[in-house]
Length: 244
Length: 255
Ligand code: SF4
Ligand code: SF4
Ligand code: FES
Ligand code: FES
Image 1 (spheres, chains in turn purple, red):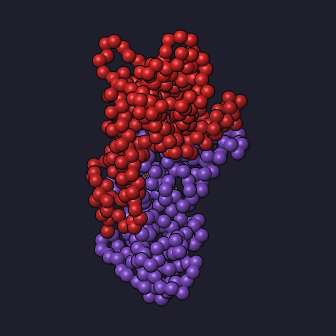
Image 2 (cartoon, rainbow over the protein chains, first blue to last red):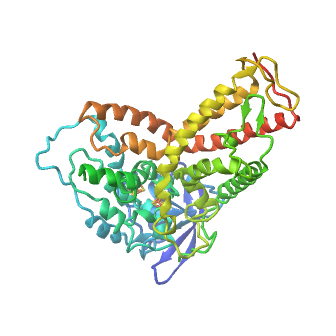
């Protein structure tokens, strides 16, 4: 047993402040355990979202000492516990209460994406090498930490013109699928605002599933957009040979 | 609750170290490259040619340093490279300076307006690959030594040439290797050789392209490391040849 100090945001988007707590914790506890103990012993009205406590549901995202992380996957041991630990809700989304944010904007964005559209005559058969790339993207747990840290949303608030890294990952998975027939490149260039991403890689740095978001999803999509809309040689080639 | 002014963050670590360090390294490199590029002197010694001046192109009508005519290619190549974009957007434009840290500029267009030219990186890649061929030629030259030796002014003595290796040759060959690892790990090349395909197993050609894509992907995983290593080594290569040419150090002939 030892004692730690926590500073936790309490309130909503409209009003709130950080409150300090002192808590007895044990070896091996994660930040989410500390929050649960706080709810059980001192503050039953402290709101937070969680579900699996195994890093798989993507619910417990927060900002711990200023870094977007999953509370259930952040060990107290790995934090400087002799100093006060700050726990704040995701900055990019409206705060419903305390550590629970309203991430529903993401679901609205998701609805705009053309879903998987298999070719009509497709053979539902492919090899592992065809889907290795996509399987990396399917690891996404929709924790929205990448959306939170992406400065295009976090700082520049481009929510109305930008889809964000999580949805570039989803669209990359669809675009690279061997039997998908939909064309999402015009959407990526315009409504999804792929050009706003300046490939500074914060999304990749925070992804708890270690998806190489920038290198494997965003940059390949950017290159596909360049082929289609910017590269004069490719455009001419397509015109001459009437390829899509 | 949010404060997005420059440097505002709840992070406790030394987040400013990376942007400050890269800023310093890049400023040093830019200053060195500008000085070397404008000097127009000491870029050759014996069979060696500084990579900053390769391919050597000295038209009579050009009154300035010949490097200015060729540096545009490596400069354009590196500044439009995805890895360097990330580096200078962070270190110079502070867009953002580090993750979850506030920024200086309020107005942001990313790569949609002014920076849309970054989409033309691929044309610099084509030129950079051609430049690698020039570096191969330079390296072959760096193995051809005059039988009559090197004159005190660093020029090759007239007469036939023979195969030989000096410390400078090794430095130049390593430069070519590091530059190749950096260039062939390029995101655009990765896309060109196979990344643009949706199905790798659909034909023999696509299978082959997948094989090449896998190799480029391996290099691409370390694109950042090769980007830094090649930048450092190209500078060192120039410095070595420059110091030999100035007579400050003496090249070692290995055989
Ligand atoms: S790489 Fe692009 S999507 Fe990822 S955090 Fe940076 S700007 Fe956002
Ligand atoms: S891509 Fe990674 S960071 Fe983004 S939502 Fe998915 S798991 Fe979370
Ligand atoms: S509670 Fe499910 S990811 Fe943390
Ligand atoms: S992306 Fe770095 S050289 Fe092309």
